[in-house]
Structures are given as structure tokens and as C-alpha cells.
Amino acid sequence: MAVVGLQWRSRLFSPTLALLLSAVAGLSVQAQEEDGRPASEWQIVPRISVGTTYSDNIRLAPSSEAESDLVLQVDPGVSVRKQGGRLDLRFDYTAQGLLYTQQGEAKLNNKLLGSGTAEFYQDHLFLDVQGSISQVPNTSSGQVEAGNLGLGGGSESSFATGLFNNLNLGLPGSADLFNPIGLFSDIALTGDQTTATTFSLSPYWRQNFGGWTEALLRYRYSQTGFNQGSSSDSQPSASDSDIQRVELNLKSGRRFSQLQWSLDYSRQQQTLQGNTDDASSQSDGDSTQERAKGRVDYRLNRRWALLAEAGYENNDLTTFQNDNRNGSYWGLGAIWHPNRFFSLAGLYGPDVNEIVAQWTPSGRLNLEVRRRDQAVGLSPGVHWEGSLDYQNRYSRWSAKYTEEVTSTQQLLSDGLPTLDDQGQIVVVDGPFGLTDQQFLRKRFETDFTYQRGRNGWTLKAFSEDRQGEDDTSSESAYGLGGLWTWRFAPRTASFLGTGWERDELSDDQQNDYWVSVIGLARVFTPDTGGLISYRYYRNDAEPADQGFRENRLNVRFSMKF
Image (tube, rainbow, N blue to C red):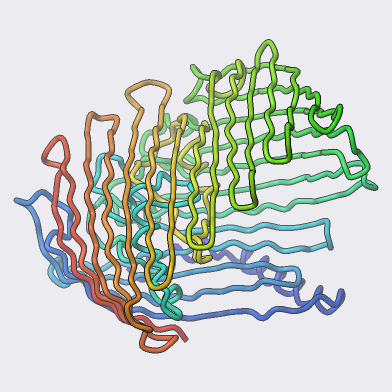
């Protein structure tokens, strides 16, 4: 298994990428010496966690087939941080080593999430780099680990993962000690796990033309691969892919006062590499998306402005042809600002109409709702988007609703990396299986956190619907959960949480997942800590042979250097 891990690492950390990161770091140091910017130190924190997990159903099988096991776990890892000068870098890697004493099996799960931004030429030339290695479900109908619940990929927050793996215990150093590994980190032997790797490289150029025009030219290359070093017994249900995207954005500069304008163009091409067994599927998910849009706002007075918008869509999605219409559109409208807290914009034309409302009564509350009906583009028709963010001294409440036509590869590529409220990187995976088909994704998620004194509360809810080109490929999932943490001593805290999720899958299968966890954590020193937790996990499935129950006890000791 160690050889498998080395193979994964060699793919992601190619000589080209290693030289690239070295060049970025070298340029950053040189830039700090040349322009006199304050230098910031590199933060390199090695860590190791050792522990044991007992499960009375290690394969998440029906009760009559349940097998218990005692799993020994060793998780060495490293976190790298660099911010300042011309380089901003975040990198987290963990090698999760698991030994199953009863099953006679061993495996190594590589977990990596990282991103970096380098400034090559001051205020003009930049480079973004992102990469990840994670374990994801291969098929929707397989058994799903609790850590994969609620997050359909490419989301800004998570459900079970965000509730239980990223614990805000209020203890010194607890985030670095416990969160990089998590409580539900792919220990179960489901036989349906696939290792996914992503890497993206994006250089871009910013230019200001004398205050008249601001320009951004960006190129992005991303690669997604599956199943190398996988723990699954079957081939993945999605192909490796390459995605190339070019963007050009022009907008009015500071010299414009009454007139504001913008021009946007993008072209994206996704190419599949034919990793699946079916040779005919090698080109099924290949797609090209091309868009151009121009917008002009002319302010009449403090309350009113006129607006005009025109655009063109030219898309070719081989697995979403029925819901795709190419062509141009245009519309005219107005913007109303009755006061500095509220705005309402309306646009109407032969092939498009839109209304956008925004309310910001204070710096603590922001609400925006958008309804757009467009006759051309991907999935023509009415689409909604909305976001809400409210925070005060002790709490924060956020909600978001989005609709988009996307793919498994696109979600994995776009969703990296994600940071929680503590600045920790969280994993992007989910209960939905892999596929080469494009789909319309509708997702709502809401998150409420309250922290006062020694007590903390977190509540989360989500709903996600994926609609394919036909009804047989549509799936949905929704759920909610809560977590309470209590720091009852300066170095000791407890946590108690529960969650529920329902999955309605395309093969007439329905899963009702229930998960509860209770635990105790103690930080012995700022660099060492221990944790003990108990988890109950159940799936009431239809058909019943997919159901299971599991009790799991976990003890671990963590140290950072």
C-alpha cells in the first residue's frame, strides 16, 4: 500500500510542479528584498496522530452480515502557511495509514488540499495554483461514510464534515491538533471508495489603462483524475478530464462617473480521457461553453439609473443537448435606489428578463435575491439565486441558493480548496456518485453558529437536486444537523451532535442516514492533545438490503512539532 501512496504523490508532485513552487517561493523572497515589503515567515508545522477505532460493522453491511474490527491508525502530516510579500500559500497533507487487525487488510489514504497565489510582476502578473487528493464515493447506490454526507461537491460549506470534523472547541491549538484528520475519515471498508485528484494552474494579468478601463485576462487549466490507488474493487464511474478556460473581463475605470460599463467573454473546453470501461463514453462528456456579455449603466440621478445588457451563448454539451439553446439576447431596464440600504434592478427583452433586489441595512446584514428568465443558454428558463449573511457579536447566520449546469469533474475542480470559519481547509466530497453526465444542480444551504463564553452551537441544513437530461438520471438529497460544544475546563471540552440526511437516487433507492456523536477532547500542552469519541450511524434504506447500523469508538493522541 505504501507503493500506491508514492504513486499518488508522484502524480501530483511532478518535477514541473515542484520547480514551479520553488520558483514562486524564490521570486517572493527576491521581491521582498527589491520592493521593501515586510517579509512574513514560513509556517511549517509537522504533525502526527496515532489512535485506534473499534467498529462493530466495519463494512457498513446489513446487520446479518456485520463484521467488527479494531483499526490501528497512524496519520503523519504537515501544514504549510506563507502569507505576505508576493506569495500566499496554504498546504495541508496527511498520509492516513490504517491497519485492520481482524480483516487482515491495510491501506493508505492520501489526503491533500492546497492553494497558492504568487505575484510575478507587481500589480499585473499573478499565478494561482490549487490541488487536492481525497476519497469520494464511486456510485450513489453504494454505502456512504458519514463524513461524505451533505456535501455534493464544490460547495462553500459542509454538513456532517463541517459539523463534526472541524470542531471549534475553544481550546488552545485544538484546530491544528484534531481537525486536519477528522472523526469520519474514510475508515469503513465500503468497497465503493475512489481516490480523486485535482490540480489547476491559472495565470492572469491585470491592467489599468489610465483610469479609463480595468482589464483582466485569465487562463485556467485544471485536471481531474480518479481511481489511482483507489480502495474500490471496481472502475470509477467517471473519466479523467482536462478543463481549459479563457476569460477576458473589461470594465469602466474610476474616470467614469455617470456611465458604468463592462464586457465579459469566456470560453471553456472539457475533454474526457476515457478512464471508464465503456470506450463509447470517452467523448460523451466532452463539452464546449462560450459566452459573451456586455452591460451599460447610466445614472440619471441619485435614485435612478438606466441599464442595457446584451449577450451571446454558444454551448455544445453532448449529454445536455435537450436543455441547451444557442443564440443572442438583449434587454433594457432600470435601477432604483430609494436609499443607500436598498436597490431594485429590472431588465426586460425579447429573450431575457431579470429582477434583482439587494438590501443592506447595516454592515452586519446583506440580502440579495435574483430571478432571471433567459431563453438561450444552458437550461433555458427561470433560475433563482440568493444569499443572506447576518452576524452580530456572538452569532452568524448565512444562507445561499444557487442553480448551475455542471459536471462531477467541474465541481471537484472548482470546489478547491474550501476554508471554514477558523481558516482550516475542509474536504470537498459528497454522497452523490461519479458520472460523466452534465446535470442541472440546484442547491440550498444554511448555517447558523453561536459562540458565547464556554458554549458553542452550530446548526446546518441543506438541500441539493441534480437533474440530468432525463428523469432516470435525476437525484436529490437533503438534511439537517446540529452540534453543541462545551469548554467546561481551561484545557478540556466536550461535544455532542446529531444529523439526518435523506438521499433519493436514480435507481429508486432511498437512504435515510442518521448519525450521532459524543466526545471529549483535552489539550495537554499547546502542541499535544487527546480525544475520545463515540459515534452511532444508521441507514434506513429502501430496498432494505442497503440498510445498516454501526457503533464506533475512537481514541487518538495528536502532536504537532
